[in-house]
Length: 368
Image (cartoon, rainbow, N blue to C red; front, side, top):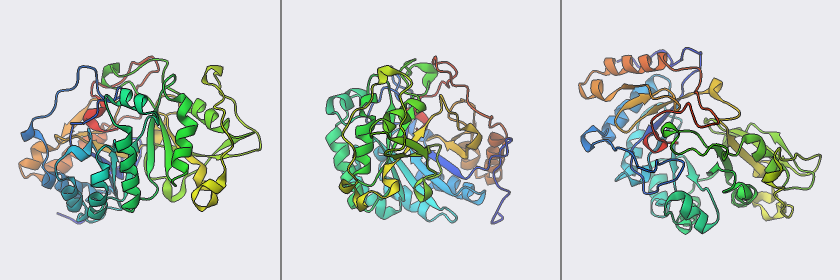
Protein backbone atom coordinates (compact mmCIF):
# COMPACT_ATOMS: atom_id res chain seq x y z
CA UNK A 1 0.00 0.00 0.00
CA UNK A 2 1.42 3.45 -0.86
CA UNK A 3 2.75 5.50 2.03
CA UNK A 4 0.24 8.29 1.38
CA UNK A 5 -3.17 8.72 -0.20
CA UNK A 6 -4.96 11.86 -1.38
CA UNK A 7 -6.15 13.87 1.63
CA UNK A 8 -9.66 13.45 3.01
CA UNK A 9 -11.63 16.43 1.70
CA UNK A 10 -15.41 16.50 1.79
CA UNK A 11 -17.82 17.97 -0.80
CA UNK A 12 -17.73 21.33 1.04
CA UNK A 13 -13.91 21.35 0.69
CA UNK A 14 -13.41 20.83 4.45
CA UNK A 15 -10.21 18.94 5.18
CA UNK A 16 -10.66 16.06 7.63
CA UNK A 17 -7.76 15.69 10.05
CA UNK A 18 -9.52 14.45 13.21
CA UNK A 19 -11.08 11.07 13.98
CA UNK A 20 -13.20 10.42 17.05
CA UNK A 21 -13.17 6.75 18.03
CA UNK A 22 -15.87 5.32 20.28
CA UNK A 23 -14.20 2.40 22.05
CA UNK A 24 -17.37 1.30 23.87
CA UNK A 25 -21.08 2.12 23.94
CA UNK A 26 -21.23 1.29 27.67
CA UNK A 27 -21.10 3.88 30.42
CA UNK A 28 -21.13 3.80 34.20
CA UNK A 29 -23.16 7.04 34.28
CA UNK A 30 -26.63 7.78 32.94
CA UNK A 31 -26.37 11.50 32.18
CA UNK A 32 -29.76 12.92 31.35
CA UNK A 33 -28.57 14.66 28.16
CA UNK A 34 -26.69 11.58 26.93
CA UNK A 35 -28.61 8.41 27.86
CA UNK A 36 -32.32 8.09 26.86
CA UNK A 37 -34.65 7.20 29.75
CA UNK A 38 -35.15 3.69 28.39
CA UNK A 39 -31.45 3.10 27.74
CA UNK A 40 -29.95 2.00 24.42
CA UNK A 41 -29.34 -1.26 22.59
CA UNK A 42 -25.69 -2.21 22.97
CA UNK A 43 -23.62 -3.81 20.25
CA UNK A 44 -22.83 -7.50 20.70
CA UNK A 45 -19.34 -8.45 21.84
CA UNK A 46 -18.49 -10.06 18.50
CA UNK A 47 -19.52 -6.87 16.70
CA UNK A 48 -17.19 -4.69 18.74
CA UNK A 49 -13.88 -3.74 17.13
CA UNK A 50 -10.84 -5.23 18.81
CA UNK A 51 -7.96 -2.99 19.80
CA UNK A 52 -5.94 -4.37 16.89
CA UNK A 53 -8.78 -3.57 14.47
CA UNK A 54 -9.08 -0.03 15.83
CA UNK A 55 -5.33 0.46 15.43
CA UNK A 56 -5.46 -0.87 11.87
CA UNK A 57 -8.25 1.56 10.95
CA UNK A 58 -6.51 4.47 12.65
CA UNK A 59 -3.34 3.61 10.73
CA UNK A 60 -5.25 3.82 7.46
CA UNK A 61 -6.86 7.11 8.48
CA UNK A 62 -3.41 8.46 9.39
CA UNK A 63 -2.16 7.62 5.90
CA UNK A 64 -5.16 9.54 4.57
CA UNK A 65 -4.25 12.69 6.49
CA UNK A 66 -5.83 12.28 9.94
CA UNK A 67 -3.49 13.76 12.54
CA UNK A 68 -5.56 13.71 15.72
CA UNK A 69 -7.48 10.89 17.36
CA UNK A 70 -9.88 11.32 20.28
CA UNK A 71 -11.01 8.27 22.23
CA UNK A 72 -14.61 8.48 23.42
CA UNK A 73 -17.43 6.18 24.48
CA UNK A 74 -19.85 5.70 26.07
CA UNK A 75 -17.25 6.03 28.75
CA UNK A 76 -13.89 4.89 27.33
CA UNK A 77 -12.33 4.04 30.69
CA UNK A 78 -14.80 1.19 31.25
CA UNK A 79 -13.23 -0.66 28.30
CA UNK A 80 -10.84 -3.18 29.81
CA UNK A 81 -7.11 -2.42 29.48
CA UNK A 82 -7.62 0.87 27.63
CA UNK A 83 -3.91 1.83 27.99
CA UNK A 84 -3.06 -1.13 25.75
CA UNK A 85 -5.08 0.47 22.94
CA UNK A 86 -3.33 3.79 23.52
CA UNK A 87 0.05 2.08 23.17
CA UNK A 88 -1.04 0.55 19.87
CA UNK A 89 -2.20 3.94 18.61
CA UNK A 90 0.99 5.62 19.76
CA UNK A 91 2.87 3.24 17.48
CA UNK A 92 0.83 4.46 14.48
CA UNK A 93 2.93 6.80 12.40
CA UNK A 94 1.74 10.28 11.52
CA UNK A 95 -0.44 11.08 14.53
CA UNK A 96 0.19 14.40 16.25
CA UNK A 97 -2.17 13.87 19.16
CA UNK A 98 -4.12 11.23 21.06
CA UNK A 99 -6.80 12.71 23.30
CA UNK A 100 -9.42 11.22 25.61
CA UNK A 101 -12.89 12.36 26.67
CA UNK A 102 -14.05 10.92 30.00
CA UNK A 103 -16.56 11.43 32.77
CA UNK A 104 -13.63 11.27 35.19
CA UNK A 105 -15.09 8.60 37.44
CA UNK A 106 -12.12 6.22 36.97
CA UNK A 107 -9.39 8.80 36.47
CA UNK A 108 -7.98 8.45 39.99
CA UNK A 109 -6.64 5.01 39.13
CA UNK A 110 -6.25 5.42 35.37
CA UNK A 111 -4.73 8.87 34.83
CA UNK A 112 -1.13 7.77 35.35
CA UNK A 113 -1.37 4.59 33.19
CA UNK A 114 -3.10 6.52 30.39
CA UNK A 115 -0.48 9.27 30.47
CA UNK A 116 2.33 6.72 30.46
CA UNK A 117 0.73 4.91 27.53
CA UNK A 118 0.68 8.10 25.47
CA UNK A 119 -2.54 10.09 25.93
CA UNK A 120 -1.71 13.77 25.30
CA UNK A 121 -4.88 15.60 26.30
CA UNK A 122 -7.91 15.10 28.53
CA UNK A 123 -11.44 16.45 28.36
CA UNK A 124 -13.36 15.77 31.56
CA UNK A 125 -17.12 16.23 32.00
CA UNK A 126 -18.14 18.30 35.01
CA UNK A 127 -21.71 19.57 34.92
CA UNK A 128 -21.98 20.84 38.49
CA UNK A 129 -19.85 21.55 41.56
CA UNK A 130 -22.79 20.68 43.81
CA UNK A 131 -22.67 17.00 44.85
CA UNK A 132 -26.42 16.42 44.85
CA UNK A 133 -26.97 18.22 41.54
CA UNK A 134 -24.05 16.30 40.05
CA UNK A 135 -25.55 13.03 41.27
CA UNK A 136 -28.91 13.95 39.77
CA UNK A 137 -27.70 14.88 36.27
CA UNK A 138 -25.30 11.93 36.02
CA UNK A 139 -27.73 9.34 37.34
CA UNK A 140 -25.76 8.58 40.48
CA UNK A 141 -22.27 9.94 39.84
CA UNK A 142 -19.93 10.82 42.70
CA UNK A 143 -18.52 14.34 42.39
CA UNK A 144 -15.76 13.62 44.92
CA UNK A 145 -14.44 10.78 42.74
CA UNK A 146 -14.29 13.03 39.68
CA UNK A 147 -12.48 15.77 41.59
CA UNK A 148 -10.04 13.18 42.91
CA UNK A 149 -9.54 11.96 39.36
CA UNK A 150 -8.83 15.47 38.11
CA UNK A 151 -6.19 15.93 40.79
CA UNK A 152 -4.66 12.58 39.80
CA UNK A 153 -4.59 13.68 36.15
CA UNK A 154 -2.72 16.85 37.08
CA UNK A 155 -0.20 14.84 39.10
CA UNK A 156 0.23 12.47 36.15
CA UNK A 157 1.39 15.36 34.00
CA UNK A 158 -1.72 16.32 32.05
CA UNK A 159 -1.75 20.08 31.49
CA UNK A 160 -4.36 22.27 29.87
CA UNK A 161 -7.13 19.89 30.95
CA UNK A 162 -10.47 20.93 29.47
CA UNK A 163 -13.54 20.85 31.70
CA UNK A 164 -16.72 20.19 29.70
CA UNK A 165 -20.08 21.38 31.04
CA UNK A 166 -23.43 20.92 29.31
CA UNK A 167 -25.04 24.26 30.11
CA UNK A 168 -28.70 23.98 31.12
CA UNK A 169 -30.84 26.96 32.10
CA UNK A 170 -32.42 26.43 35.49
CA UNK A 171 -29.92 23.74 36.44
CA UNK A 172 -26.33 25.01 36.29
CA UNK A 173 -26.59 28.50 34.78
CA UNK A 174 -25.84 29.83 38.27
CA UNK A 175 -22.58 27.83 38.29
CA UNK A 176 -21.07 29.11 35.04
CA UNK A 177 -18.81 31.56 36.87
CA UNK A 178 -17.96 29.09 39.65
CA UNK A 179 -16.96 26.48 37.07
CA UNK A 180 -14.77 29.03 35.31
CA UNK A 181 -13.03 29.96 38.54
CA UNK A 182 -12.63 26.33 39.52
CA UNK A 183 -10.87 25.60 36.23
CA UNK A 184 -8.84 28.81 36.06
CA UNK A 185 -7.51 28.38 39.58
CA UNK A 186 -5.98 25.07 38.46
CA UNK A 187 -4.69 26.20 35.08
CA UNK A 188 -7.45 24.34 33.21
CA UNK A 189 -9.86 25.51 30.52
CA UNK A 190 -13.63 25.52 31.14
CA UNK A 191 -15.90 24.85 28.18
CA UNK A 192 -19.66 25.09 27.96
CA UNK A 193 -21.77 23.02 25.57
CA UNK A 194 -25.26 23.73 24.30
CA UNK A 195 -27.55 20.73 24.74
CA UNK A 196 -28.46 18.91 21.51
CA UNK A 197 -31.62 16.97 20.52
CA UNK A 198 -29.98 13.56 20.27
CA UNK A 199 -31.86 10.23 20.41
CA UNK A 200 -34.77 11.67 18.46
CA UNK A 201 -35.10 14.45 21.02
CA UNK A 202 -35.67 12.07 23.97
CA UNK A 203 -32.87 13.64 26.03
CA UNK A 204 -33.61 17.25 25.08
CA UNK A 205 -35.55 19.83 27.10
CA UNK A 206 -36.79 22.62 24.79
CA UNK A 207 -36.11 26.04 26.21
CA UNK A 208 -33.57 24.78 28.75
CA UNK A 209 -30.43 24.88 26.61
CA UNK A 210 -28.35 27.86 27.70
CA UNK A 211 -27.34 29.73 24.51
CA UNK A 212 -23.80 30.84 23.79
CA UNK A 213 -24.63 34.55 24.07
CA UNK A 214 -26.08 34.04 27.55
CA UNK A 215 -23.00 32.10 28.66
CA UNK A 216 -20.72 34.93 27.54
CA UNK A 217 -22.94 37.43 29.31
CA UNK A 218 -22.78 35.49 32.56
CA UNK A 219 -18.99 35.36 32.43
CA UNK A 220 -18.72 39.07 31.59
CA UNK A 221 -21.07 40.00 34.43
CA UNK A 222 -18.82 38.24 36.95
CA UNK A 223 -16.35 41.16 36.88
CA UNK A 224 -17.05 44.86 37.43
CA UNK A 225 -17.47 46.29 33.93
CA UNK A 226 -16.13 43.03 32.58
CA UNK A 227 -16.14 42.18 28.91
CA UNK A 228 -15.60 39.02 26.89
CA UNK A 229 -13.48 39.06 23.75
CA UNK A 230 -12.70 36.36 21.18
CA UNK A 231 -9.49 34.44 21.82
CA UNK A 232 -8.18 31.86 19.37
CA UNK A 233 -6.82 29.78 22.22
CA UNK A 234 -3.31 29.36 20.85
CA UNK A 235 -1.76 25.99 21.61
CA UNK A 236 -4.57 25.25 24.07
CA UNK A 237 -7.31 25.56 21.49
CA UNK A 238 -7.13 22.02 20.20
CA UNK A 239 -8.83 20.94 17.01
CA UNK A 240 -12.42 20.62 18.18
CA UNK A 241 -15.56 22.66 17.60
CA UNK A 242 -15.19 25.05 20.55
CA UNK A 243 -14.82 28.77 20.01
CA UNK A 244 -12.68 30.42 22.66
CA UNK A 245 -13.10 33.68 24.54
CA UNK A 246 -11.31 35.58 27.29
CA UNK A 247 -12.69 37.57 30.20
CA UNK A 248 -11.21 41.03 30.55
CA UNK A 249 -12.10 42.99 33.71
CA UNK A 250 -13.11 46.58 33.13
CA UNK A 251 -13.74 48.37 29.88
CA UNK A 252 -17.46 47.79 29.47
CA UNK A 253 -19.48 44.73 30.29
CA UNK A 254 -22.23 42.71 28.72
CA UNK A 255 -25.71 42.07 30.04
CA UNK A 256 -27.55 38.79 29.87
CA UNK A 257 -30.21 38.93 27.15
CA UNK A 258 -32.73 37.38 29.54
CA UNK A 259 -33.02 38.94 32.99
CA UNK A 260 -34.08 35.58 34.41
CA UNK A 261 -30.49 34.37 34.05
CA UNK A 262 -29.38 36.76 36.76
CA UNK A 263 -26.25 38.85 37.04
CA UNK A 264 -23.96 36.07 38.31
CA UNK A 265 -22.89 38.35 41.14
CA UNK A 266 -19.53 37.36 42.58
CA UNK A 267 -16.48 38.96 44.11
CA UNK A 268 -13.88 40.09 41.56
CA UNK A 269 -11.39 37.39 40.65
CA UNK A 270 -8.01 37.98 42.26
CA UNK A 271 -5.29 37.13 39.75
CA UNK A 272 -2.89 36.56 42.63
CA UNK A 273 -4.87 33.41 43.40
CA UNK A 274 -4.16 31.95 39.97
CA UNK A 275 -1.09 30.00 38.84
CA UNK A 276 1.40 32.36 37.23
CA UNK A 277 -0.48 35.37 38.67
CA UNK A 278 -3.07 35.40 35.95
CA UNK A 279 -1.53 35.50 32.47
CA UNK A 280 -4.23 36.20 29.88
CA UNK A 281 -5.06 32.57 29.07
CA UNK A 282 -6.04 31.98 32.69
CA UNK A 283 -9.35 33.69 31.93
CA UNK A 284 -9.99 31.76 28.72
CA UNK A 285 -13.11 29.67 28.23
CA UNK A 286 -14.68 27.83 25.34
CA UNK A 287 -18.22 27.43 24.04
CA UNK A 288 -19.50 24.65 21.81
CA UNK A 289 -22.67 26.06 20.29
CA UNK A 290 -24.33 23.69 17.81
CA UNK A 291 -27.77 25.17 18.46
CA UNK A 292 -27.36 28.96 18.30
CA UNK A 293 -23.98 29.65 16.65
CA UNK A 294 -23.28 26.85 14.20
CA UNK A 295 -19.72 25.74 13.48
CA UNK A 296 -20.46 23.21 10.74
CA UNK A 297 -18.54 25.20 8.12
CA UNK A 298 -15.28 24.42 9.95
CA UNK A 299 -16.00 20.75 10.73
CA UNK A 300 -12.84 18.65 10.42
CA UNK A 301 -14.07 15.39 11.97
CA UNK A 302 -15.30 11.90 11.27
CA UNK A 303 -16.58 9.47 13.90
CA UNK A 304 -15.97 5.75 14.21
CA UNK A 305 -18.43 3.74 16.31
CA UNK A 306 -17.48 0.84 18.53
CA UNK A 307 -18.86 -1.56 15.91
CA UNK A 308 -16.91 0.00 13.04
CA UNK A 309 -19.57 2.27 11.55
CA UNK A 310 -18.17 5.52 10.15
CA UNK A 311 -20.38 8.55 10.86
CA UNK A 312 -19.67 11.68 8.87
CA UNK A 313 -21.76 13.89 11.19
CA UNK A 314 -22.95 13.74 14.77
CA UNK A 315 -26.31 15.11 13.69
CA UNK A 316 -27.23 12.47 11.10
CA UNK A 317 -27.73 8.71 11.26
CA UNK A 318 -26.26 7.77 7.90
CA UNK A 319 -23.10 5.71 8.30
CA UNK A 320 -20.96 3.30 6.33
CA UNK A 321 -19.60 -0.03 7.52
CA UNK A 322 -15.82 -0.36 7.84
CA UNK A 323 -15.82 -3.53 9.95
CA UNK A 324 -17.00 -5.79 7.12
CA UNK A 325 -14.23 -5.04 4.62
CA UNK A 326 -11.66 -4.82 7.43
CA UNK A 327 -12.45 -8.32 8.71
CA UNK A 328 -12.43 -9.59 5.14
CA UNK A 329 -8.87 -8.31 4.82
CA UNK A 330 -9.90 -5.84 2.11
CA UNK A 331 -8.08 -2.61 3.01
CA UNK A 332 -8.82 -1.20 -0.43
CA UNK A 333 -12.49 -1.78 0.33
CA UNK A 334 -12.09 -0.02 3.68
CA UNK A 335 -10.63 3.03 1.97
CA UNK A 336 -13.39 2.93 -0.64
CA UNK A 337 -15.99 2.90 2.15
CA UNK A 338 -14.27 5.79 3.94
CA UNK A 339 -14.35 7.90 0.81
CA UNK A 340 -17.97 6.96 0.14
CA UNK A 341 -18.93 8.08 3.63
CA UNK A 342 -16.97 11.28 3.24
CA UNK A 343 -18.60 12.03 -0.11
CA UNK A 344 -21.97 12.02 1.66
CA UNK A 345 -20.88 14.40 4.44
CA UNK A 346 -23.48 17.14 4.54
CA UNK A 347 -22.96 20.89 4.91
CA UNK A 348 -24.43 20.80 8.42
CA UNK A 349 -26.90 19.32 10.85
CA UNK A 350 -30.63 19.98 11.17
CA UNK A 351 -30.90 20.56 14.93
CA UNK A 352 -33.86 22.74 15.94
CA UNK A 353 -34.31 24.59 19.22
CA UNK A 354 -37.71 22.95 19.68
CA UNK A 355 -35.99 19.56 19.87
CA UNK A 356 -36.56 18.31 16.33
CA UNK A 357 -34.05 17.54 13.61
CA UNK A 358 -31.71 15.35 15.63
CA UNK A 359 -30.54 11.80 14.86
CA UNK A 360 -31.98 8.61 16.30
CA UNK A 361 -28.60 7.69 17.78
CA UNK A 362 -27.94 8.71 21.37
CA UNK A 363 -24.82 10.54 22.45
CA UNK A 364 -23.75 7.55 24.55
CA UNK A 365 -23.57 5.46 21.37
CA UNK A 366 -21.19 7.70 19.45
CA UNK A 367 -19.35 9.92 21.94
CA UNK A 368 -19.80 13.61 22.70
